[in-house]
Image (cartoon, rainbow, N blue to C red; front, side, top):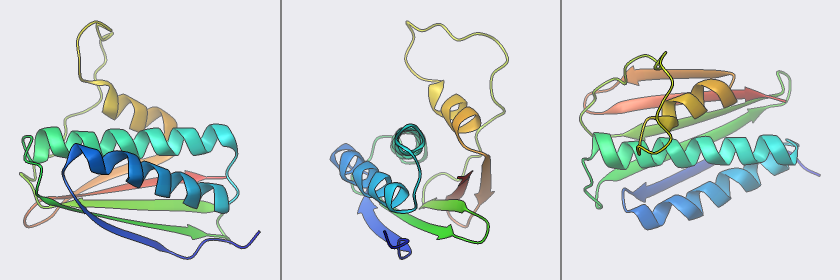
Length: 137
């Protein structure tokens, strides 16, 4: 199997965009030779990141731009995903230390990112935010 070419997706903040983007990043991770569990984790993290952009950065607006770039470095065996929004630019706070109430919505996106990816980094942009996710094979 051939390693994937870099992936670039431009889409809007409409919730219907989440599933196709998740499927594209899962296909990319599969082509980069990640196993089924890791592919699912990567897809979940991208799903949660986009949902958080829609909910927080764009406050539910469904016509705002989002860009996703993914690359795989075979020498480092590392997947890098960059998700860029043009929203509020408010940096998320630290991961919560207290146990979350599973009956209350929200709060799980950052926990998923922090536990399932090897590295997460938020870099404020003008305007918006760049989220960089990394996962090694």
